[in-house]
Image (cartoon, rainbow, N blue to C red; front, side):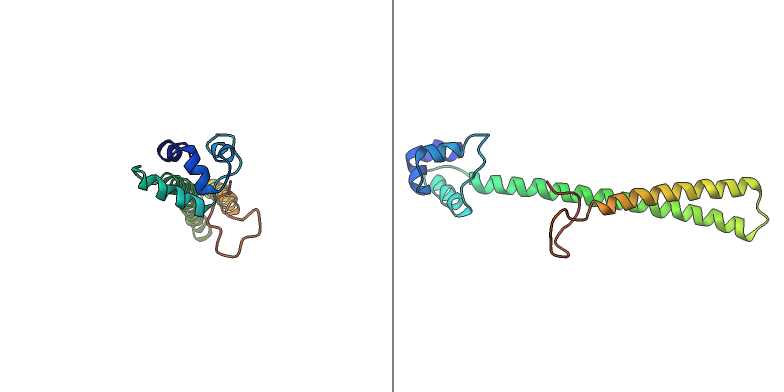
Length: 152
């Protein structure tokens, strides 16, 4: 808001918003809990550009916030993929060593190795379960719309 008002002036910003200057100035403060509507933001950006400003401050701010949200979701999905790969590897190794015990005259060392691999597989699956659980929504979200990780 400060960037826009710096080009078009606070009185014009208040006129565009159909609000008092005090309200529009409040939107520029860090502790402000309200923001202009999307329709107002579009008008502010248009007025800013018409007055010679470069870019679109409100559109850029929205794009930045969306980018941060998307990066968090992508990070959650990458972490899930890593946990899934680890679980697949660890359970695969456990299965391979258990097959050796089941189909041969396995030594106690072979059996101990199979047990150790099974423990690693169990731990990897527990991490995978925790990661998958983080994809569950805290609130009512239609199926398929929540894309991962805890929101907020």
